[in-house]
Image (cartoon, rainbow, N blue to C red; front, side):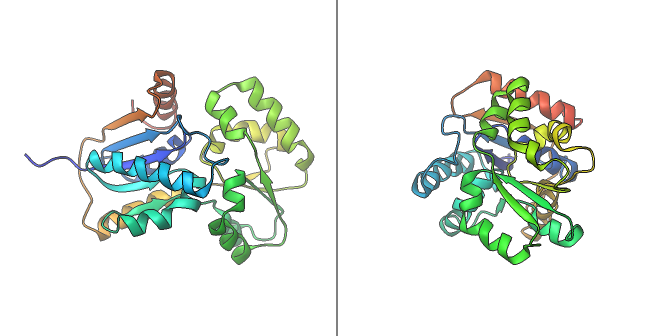
Length: 255
C-alpha cells in the first residue's frame, strides 16, 4: 500500500494555525502535519545561525513523516531560512509566508499604513527588499516585541494591555494594518478595539494558500485524502494542542 503524503507546516508556536485555516479552505482534502516549536520560541531573539539550525531540524522531522511540501508559517523563519532550505532540499517545495505589504501597494496605496511584525522580520533582508520595492511613503514599521509570546500564552488581559500601550498612539492615524506575524490575526478584533473599525487588515495567508495549491498542481503533488490534521509540539505540551484545535474548530469546519 502506498504511503500517504502529507503537507508539513511549522511555526514557532500555534500562530501558524491562522495560515492552516486559509490552506484548508483551498485544499480541504489534503493531510497536514503541524509542528509547533514551543521549545525554541521566540525565534525573533535568535541569531541567523540558530534559526537555520532550528528550521533544518524541523524540516528533517517533517520529511521523516513523508511530507511532500513544507509551509513555513513563521515570518521570521521565512525571512531568515527559506533560501537555505530551498538550496539544501531542492526536491521539496517550500512555501514561505511573508508580510502582505505588496497588497497595500496593490489595493490601498494612498492610505497611512502600519506594519506590525517581530524585530527579526523587520530587520531581515527579505522584508527590507519587499518594503523598499513597494514603499508607499506613508508607512511606519512597528517592532511588536513580545506580542507573539503574549498571544501564544492566551492571556486576554495581558493582550489588551499590551495593545493599548503599543497601538494607542496610532488611533486615527493609520488605516491599513499589515499583520506581519502569523500570531497577530488571532487578536484582530482586539486591535480594532484600540484603533477603530475603519482599519483594513492585510494578511499574507490567503495568498499563500492559493500559491501552495498552484505549486502542488505544477509538481503533480495534489492528493485527494481525508483531510487529517496531526499536531506535534516540540515540548509535548498538551495545552498547546488543545488550544490549536479549539482555534481551528472556530475558524473552519474541521473538528
